[in-house]
Image (cartoon, rainbow over all chains, first blue to last red; front, side, top):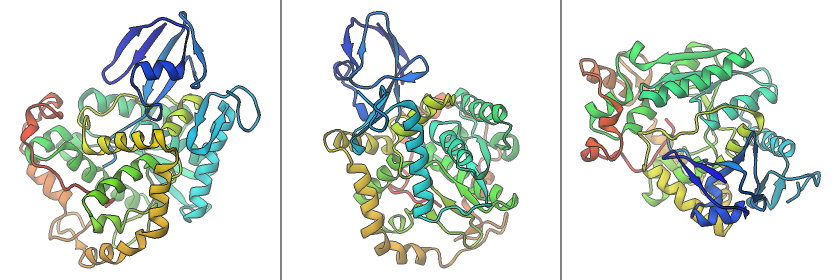
Length: 66
Length: 328
């Protein structure tokens, strides 16, 4: 599967099947800090991603709250 | 995973609420939480004109959309900060949101109207960029609200923002800031009323709301905020939240219930000697307000590119701003 990451923008090619929760664990990402987006919707933690999937792991933390 | 409400397929789990939601019920959940915040804290009254501070990010666009969905008369205001491509993309997101819905968006451009931008202000003042950025935004939003006859300013501060600011203010015991870290700041002394209708929503929830509502917001982080203290506090809180869901909510709302009132006299005292700025008339504790002093200071400065002042760049030796944060 193709995984798009941000800040910095980069792309990873990873093997499926794998659950979203496990994928985030492998990438050492906190589930509180990201959303997983596939197409125009979200993918929950227990969803299984396959080799054909393209997902974006979108950070949700913003820091300009001055 | 099934939606807690309708048992259809869920798209998100919210552990702090012990709930999962499908797209429709997540959107409804966000509306309910905003309506509850507005009601609980008497933020807005029917018929009031609301000016929404719009950055083009997830929180401000979600806020504008939610207020309109709840039936409020809400116009937007966005400020061109001059932070390179980031500011261009932010403004474009705000303009696209307004244009697609036929909404009024008031625009101010720092460079065009006041002769400076945030990278240049940061370089000239030798302070972190968030300092002049926050001060400029607060001043110009207040001015736009008062000049435009708006009843209230709504900002997109969410639960994560408030919990992170609270953590910073507590760690450094910024008691004056603690006394005014409230969801509603009443109008007074030339300041418009300000409200934070997103205080019951985390930023994962506002981001999810935007994705599910098809709101195209700027996802990339401000290049000048990278690695700042506020982000580090958020990461620390999210680390705690992962093991103890609901911690951020309890931290902030228990503070409001049990402690905020202890600090309000000190906050009020610090505001006792406000007077009109000799240059623009805005309330200030000195003769000339911080905004007018900044405009004068940067008037003759050559524009400085973002790359030269972004965090980790040449500006590492900049002076540090006060650890805490207030809202005005």
